[in-house]
Image 1 (spheres, rainbow, N blue to C red):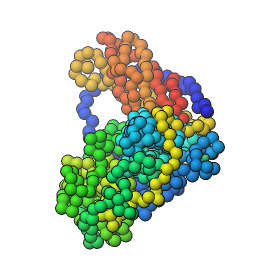
Image 2 (cartoon, rainbow, N blue to C red; image 1 turned 180 degrees about the vertical axis):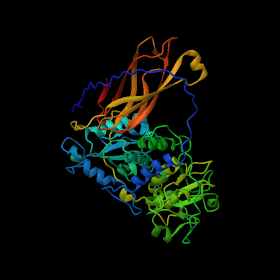
Image 3 (cartoon, helix red, strand yellow; image 1 turned 120 degrees about the vertical axis):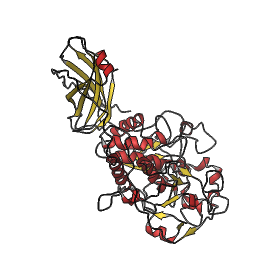
Image 4 (spheres, rainbow, N blue to C red; image 1 turned 30 degrees about the horizontal axis):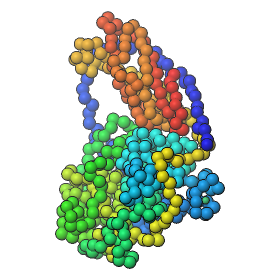
Length: 510
Ligand SMILES: [Ca+2]
Ligand SMILES: [Ca+2]
C-alpha cells in the first residue's frame, strides 16, 4: 500500500479594495459568433483521432489494445495469473465502463461475470458518464499516482468504450489532465475479448467462421459519391467557460443520450436499417479511400475519420459541414469501434439531423454484409482471469506528483445593479475575474467564503463553483451578490477560495 503525498499550502491572496458603487446599465450577453466553441471541439476531436498511439492499430487506423497485449502487461511472468510476482510498474490504468452489476460480477446473464484484475469502475458507471466531473476527478487522482500511465477503457464488447475513449481523448487533448497527456485507448472487443465465458447468444457462432449478427447481405456498390456543398456552422453555446478543456468536456458530455443510444442495428425490425430504407439516411463511410473504393454501402459518402474533424487549407471545417443533416446520419466502418470514435464528436458538434442523433452501424460493416467488414474472430476470444466484487482496484504506486502548483488571484471587479428589484433591495452584483497565476492546471475552483466591512453581507450561497478546470494564465468570471445597507457607499472585502491540483492536493486560499 502506498500513501499519497499530501501537500499543504498557505498562499495569501487576501486583497482589499475600495469599491465605489455605481448604477450601470446592463443587458444580456451577446451570443457567441457561433463557431468559436465549434472550432475548439472540432480541433480537439481531430487531434485525438490523429494522435499517435503505441499499441495496436487496425486496418482502418483505429487504435486499440488487444486483450492479449493487456494480459502480457499484467501477467509479466506469463504464469497465467495476475499477482504479487508480476511487475506493476508497466500496468496500464484499466477503466471499466460497464454497468455496476457487470463490474461486481452479480450480472451472470451476459458479459458481466466480473472485471479485469486491477480495473477501476467509473464512479457513476457506464460509458456515458466518463466525462462527468466526478469521474474525471477520480481518473485524475489515479493518473496522479503515475502520470505516464496508459488508460485502457473496457466495455462489454468493445463498442461503447470507443465512445468513452473519444470523449475522454478529446478533453485530454484540450489539456484537461495537464501534461504529459495520458495515452488513451480501448480494449479490442472489450471484456468479451478478455473472457468470453459470458458471451451473449447474439455473438454465438452458427456457421463456422461467422456469427449470428453477420447474416445480412445488404447491398454494396463501388460507385463513388461526391460530398455535397458544405452547409452553415451550427451554433454551439453550451457553456460560458472559455477553457478549451471545459468547452470540449461539456459538448462531449451533452452528446451522450441516456435514452437514445448512438448505434443502429441492420435489420428489418422497428428502428433498424436495411436495403429498402437506407435511402432515408445520410450514410458516411469513415474508412480509408481504398476500403471505400473496394465496396461500400449503397449511397454512402466517404470521409476517412482521420480527416473528418480536420480543417481545409482555407481554415474551414468543410468535411464536417458537407455531411447532409437533412436526414438522420449513420456512420460506419469495418467494425463499430472506428465509427463510434467519430459519432461522439459529430453529435457534440451538432453535425446531426435535428430529429435524431448520429448513430454508428452496430457491429460495423460486417453486420450489414458479412462478406465485407471485420469479423469477430474466435482467435480474439480468451479466458483470462477475472475478479468479482465492488472494491475498485486501481494503481498502487508511490506518489510521483511534483512540479508546479496552481495559484488563484482575483481582480478587476465590476459592480452593477443587475435588476430593478436588486436595486430596490440593495443587492449589488459584482463580477470577479478569477485567474490562475500558478504554473499548473487548477481544478474545482470555488469561492468558499467572504468577509466584509460596513455591514455588507454576501447574498450568494457559498461555496460557489467558479470552474471545473483552469489552465495557467486562464481566468473565469464569477458573480457574487452583496447586501448593501442603506447609506453604505464603499466597503472592504476579503474572499477565500479553494482549488485542487493535478495530484488531487487541496489548496486553500489564502
Ligand atoms: Ca505488469
Ligand atoms: Ca503472473
